[in-house]
Length: 168
Length: 182
Ligand SMILES: [Zn+2]
Image 1 (cartoon, each protein chain N blue to C red):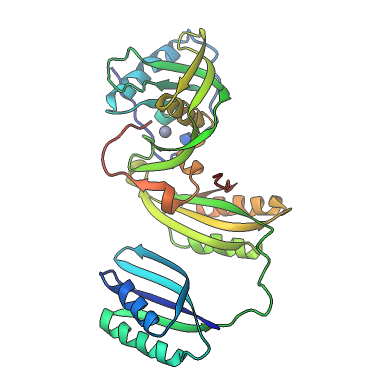
Image 2 (image 1 turned 30 degrees about the vertical axis):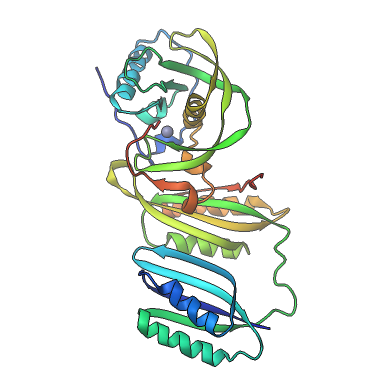
């Protein structure tokens, strides 16, 4: 079991434009899939993790909004693309790369995402609520977009964390 | 009708707003606009007041001076010149959020404000914080709200931002502020 280091802002890897995954058989990639899983489940309460956050700028994220630790609900989204979105609502989210803060941002409450899974099989997911928020947050990471970029006011939308809550 | 701007800064404690507003009420001054904030241990407020021409500005200022001693505040009172014509037209300005961040160092605020001024961009709000970033470094985050005229050419501004990013080792990003749809 390998728990990778999670990079915090302003580490430059968080601003990287991530590369498409093409070789699903590559042993380095197989190992990375396992390491990413180990890393996310090592963070209590984490509901998502994007590859660049652990220093590997490839287009893959891991989501599990149950945060239960049993790993059955985990979804690897590889080369994901959002193809449909509902209207935006204001939500509050956290990020492992800004561990002390929460941000009020606008996110769609329902999204449809097409992607591949960690084995390269095509998938389409319709997700809503927390899972939809997590998908949008993690996909932003693949384009080097961070929650600080989605905030409209430091005074009202950028909040110092009081206690633990779900993050990604 | 005449107007004045009143400001007060002092160690935060209960009774500051009450003390101020009591003086204003006693003199029949009307509070037209106000802004208050707490920064660290300090409370700061700025008020625009209006009063009838018969009200003595000296008397209001004198009573505020008493408050200054009672509450341990720094108070300023300044009669406001009413502009003959409306100041710079603000109705064709689009609000933008310019966010600046990077390892904490002196001069970031000045350099950015100076650059914006050189492009005749008016700052309407500015908030800043230091947060703990990668490897426990201190990261400065600043968000500047500014009005940018329609049809503004962003090319030269972007070049100037890039230069400043390199010189100061910071990130500068901007986006139009979406109006809240109600
Ligand atoms: Zn994140």
